[in-house]
Image 1 (cartoon, rainbow, N blue to C red):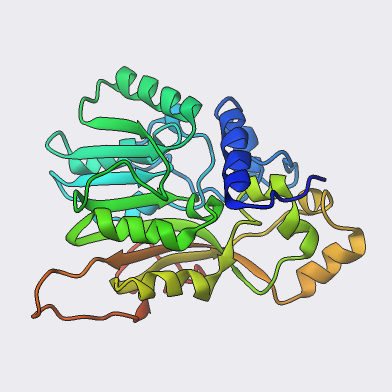
Image 2 (image 1 turned 30 degrees about the vertical axis):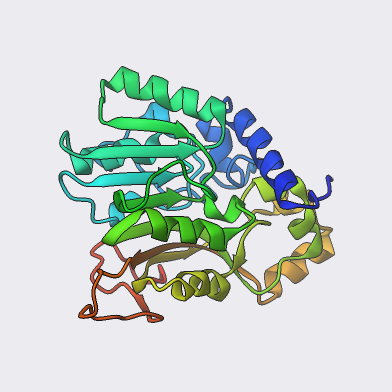
Length: 301
């Protein structure tokens, strides 16, 4: 078991190295693991991922099985929109966004893994898309001008970033006034066992980098976003054969019987319109009741 790197730069390097290797792994392996971490489960399939197969614009070659939601399904992308995908990987969500934005829109994917960028560009070339661009960069300091995006999406990425507040600040900066985001991510309720929290590989596998649900929503509120709502929420069940890499049998039992919950949430929020007459709902967090795909027990109804 490897110890967690000591500072943000080391954390980023851990994630970058891991995701460079993940880009060469099969989607099946990634879907059976925690976002492609080395511990793969034989107990269940698709620990975190949602099914993209029925989503228009989906391209199997671009799906590495690394997501924890379907943010593009909830993102309200319109024809002609400019969309940014944070941590775009092999381009899966970018190509779905491109279907929604159409030929008159523009989609920009940002990723800090050169191998992921290379794979995404090859996929875009095969599809013949000239309005989908993949740009190398750090989402804590996006290589993007101010107020260019109508919509920002991200799928199971911010939990890997040490400074989440900085990412939300960058999202606020790059969104147009009145623009919005829809982001799927992993959050916690309660504290993870120390062995899970400190292991570097599990960090690269999403879970140990997750923060408390209310802290996550608090970062969004503090920046002044409005119309904040959870569009979908589902529990993430960690299989025993993955937990056994980190915990003893007794510790697994205690973990499962405890109050800690690991959840995938899809969060929507809007950047306020400019001007003194805008109506503000700053600080308010709602459940989405207008989501037709919401099902009982999913946490979003």
